Length: 163
Image (spheres, rainbow, N blue to C red):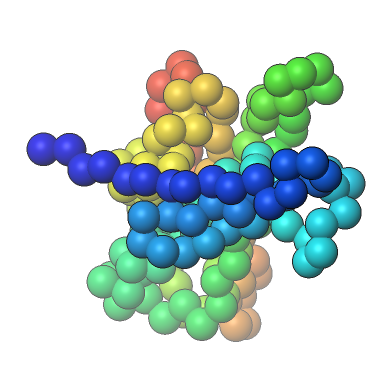
């Protein structure tokens, strides 16, 4: 069975700026603009929204898995950075996702949660990985212990590699 999604995009001022407001089927409106578009208030670039969607998607997966594993995370951020081609179309060529977690979390539990998100659950990662290499790593801070970090998985057009 398949599900469908829909979005209605409106160019706010077809004679002027490039601001676009997109309303999703669930009724949420997102605003987009081009770099230097000067929209007020400022809006996200469409390609930046892909990175934000990736961060949100994988964060929900990992947070849910850590809760189920009864891991005591009290701080959780995702840092996503990407490289873009200089020529048009200016697509991403490499994306790095770093899960920054603090609390009483076992490194193996965090590693496995990230692996599951990257390789099985996050549809945004699956779509982006069809065209670009995405690296997934973590940085874990625990009271009284040294920070630990590791590369967990690399996904992309060539397939999936779990480290």
